Length: 442
Image 1 (cartoon, helix red, strand yellow):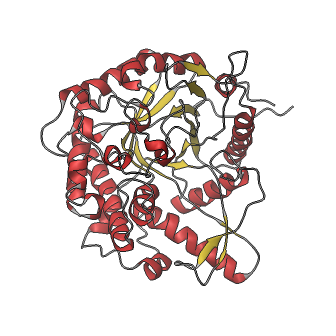
Image 2 (cartoon, one colour):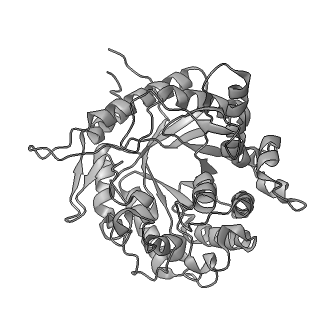
Image 3 (cartoon, rainbow, N blue to C red):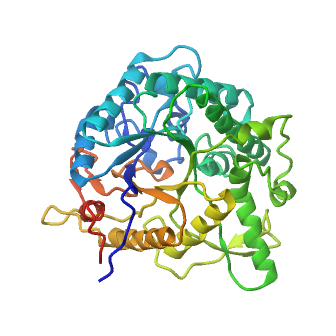
C-alpha cells in the first residue's frame, strides 16, 4: 500500500465559478453577462440551456459551505460575477451584489474555510461587450476599476485573490473559434484580446499593491505544454510552437519575458504601447494552474499555425479528454523552472463522468477517484522533488453548467439533481475527505 506525503501547510480546496453555479441571474441587481446573451444564440449551448438556475448557490450557499466543511476542505475558490458588483460595468456599485459575496465569505470563515476569490471567470457585463469587450483597450481601465471595488468591499474577508481565470479560453474559445461567449471568430481580435487580458491582470495587481491588503494575489492559467508525437525534429518544433501560442503568450509577459517570438511570427504583433509590458509584469505571490489533460502534436504544414493533435491512446473522460497524469508533472516542472520557483497552486483538476445515482442512492464514481489518485500521486512526487507546490483545488465542488455543453457533463464531487437541487456527495467526495484527513493511501 502506498502512502502519499503532503506538507502540513498544503492547502486542500475545491472550486466553482459564478455563472456555472449561482443562478439568480435576474436577482440582487445583477445585469446581463455575455454568457446570458450567448446562451440565447440558437445552437450555441447544448439544448439551449443556460445559467438561469444552475445550482442555485445564490440561495443555497450555506448548504454548500456546510458540505465543504463536512468533507474537510480548507479553502473554497469561487468567482465574483462582475455584473453583480457593477451592473453598468463601471460606475455605481451594487450593494446587493457586494452583500452576497460578503455573506458567502463570512459563512466560509464561520466554518474555518478560506475564501479564494477569482475576479473574472468569464461573465463579462454585456454592456461592456457592446463596446467591444476584451478586444478594445478601454476594458483594461474598466477591469481595474472593478478590481478596486472588489478589493475595497471584500478585501477584509478574502484570503486569496486570483485576477483572471484561463485567458486562453477567454481569447481563443471566445474570439478565435467562437465556441464560448462572445462567440466571435476573428484572429485579429483574438490577438488584441490576449494583450488586453494580460494588461488587465497587470492593472489589477498594480491596484492591489496600493491597498495595504496582505492576502496573496496571483492568476490562474490553463497552460498547455503538448508533447511531440515523435522524435522527429519537426514534431519537436511543433510542440514548442504549440506551447508558445497556447501558453507562453500568457505566462511570459507576466514574468517580464515579453511575447515569445514563435507566437509573434504566427499570430502577428501584439502592438504593446510604451510601458505595457512593465504593467503586465507585476510581482505575483503565486501562480494557479488548471490541468485536465495533455495532447501530442505533430508538424502540419496545412494547419493555420503549423501543428495539429495526434489521436490519443489513453482512456478519455466524458469530455473526450485523454487521461495523462504524467502530463501534469511535465507541465508543473516546466512552470517551476520558468517562474524561478514561484509558489504554485493547482487551481483546477477534475474528471467528467456520466454519473448515475445507484439503487442505493449513492454515486460510485470510481473512474473519477482513479483519475484523482493518479494526479495526487504526481503532486506528491513533485513536492518530494522540491517543486514549490502549495495546494490543490478540486474541480468541481458541484455538478454545474458546463458552458457550451450545458448540463450534459458532470465534473462535481457532489451530485446535483437539477430539478430538485438535491446535493448528494459522491464517493469521490468521501475519498477527498480521507485524503485531507491524512489518509492518502491506496
